[in-house]
Image (cartoon, rainbow, N blue to C red):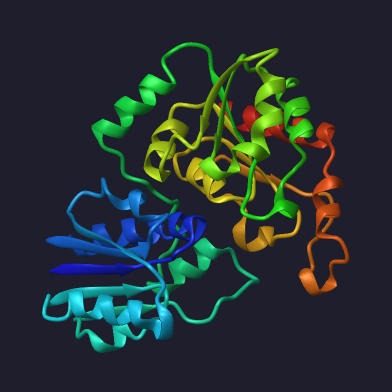
Length: 305
């Protein structure tokens, strides 16, 4: 019984699909697993027990990336195909069990939409599998000591970023002396002022551009709390069971809030869609430091209890 799992090219959506993948592995106990996803999400699945191939799909004109995937999969005899892209591939590969995600339903959380593909109840939490190598690397970056606060102050779109100076102000009011800052290499400029300011008062662990998604997951497993913009890193922290507070502005929290046992989000005003939003940046600017600190303390207390 081989399993083909086709998931998102976006990091956050790929993380949110791991709960369904975990369920499928437990349900079907496949002899080998193939995962097809975007290149940025590919490291997430490298330590999955039983994984045979992780295929990083690079978008090609006229959908030729799907032809490439079909060429690799045809003749493999997959018993289970789970297609969260509703691609042509799952229609062309014969399988004993085929599951597809239909149209997006923005009235429900993405994790709930994905669980419905296989009628899974209750909706599972997400899961990222680690190996000894990434755990050892995370331990080198984040050795034992005082509890660590993780900050994810960047995002893939500027209006989704809470101002860096507010991250600094909030972090200084939370009970942490060590702070790890996460982000992609090309986002270093966005976080530069935050790194400089916090280094004056805290022990700062600069992980900007140093981690792939799997290494970031191993690091998130070692931190005590995560404060993040709506981003793939926010979803990684939540998947690792880290108490995670997401800060939301021009994005839909009802679909993309952090999904996990100890998670919460904060926003100052509802988001009704870009077509009804005159100034997307204003939604993040309306989120006050005091409200974030209070929400963070409340979540920490709930997680501790």
